[in-house]
Image (tube, rainbow, N blue to C red; front, side):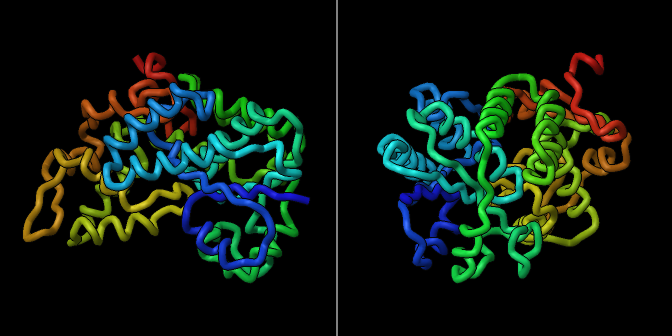
Length: 313
């Protein structure tokens, strides 16, 4: 049995290399939960869209990482493998990447290899939301042993969800994901709900994370770096890294000022948190998640629904 192991990022790859597991590896160096996406992963249009976004939002090292990923993806011959094993976690970051991987596999496979996914919650010594980077390399063989096989119809449904994510129909994502067996795929619906909460709230025009950032500033005497440190521990379902939080904070600069290197909310920021104003920013129109502009939808927290913006006019 010849395996291709696809790992979501270098943290788990570094640990994987310390194991004796057989097979080749492909590191999925992407952050598809942010920026515009193209359905056909690996196409010229895909690489152009991703390059333009990543270089503008993550300038340090983005070009080299994308070039390395493009080379690995284009030289991977799936026909050479009996099984593809996907090492992806529970959070939004990983789950959106997982949709893209399964779409790419569905498009690329000339012969239908087995496809499987490792699940941390299958190991009794680890909590459900433990990241692969937090697991002892000695336990990686047990993860492989307890992997979950994808059925062909499940792979197709993941590919359909990726197509929806790349379209403007994000309000259909949660309902469509419910068609997957929750016992077999416990993370996807929760991750997609977090995705929906990234759109402006009907309450104050802030996303869930933006509101959490402002609340943390309001209740703490805190520097930028301390704030990002707190946010990294705020909600493990997002899977965001520090650069993503720094970018979020930059987008909120009109709502705070600095006093002795500490962040302090201004009157506009206070009004937003008190529900006396709504956040509006030109950045919202230029922010894309897949095929949807952040301006296309609002999140109705009371109904737990993502609604097209037109529905609120």
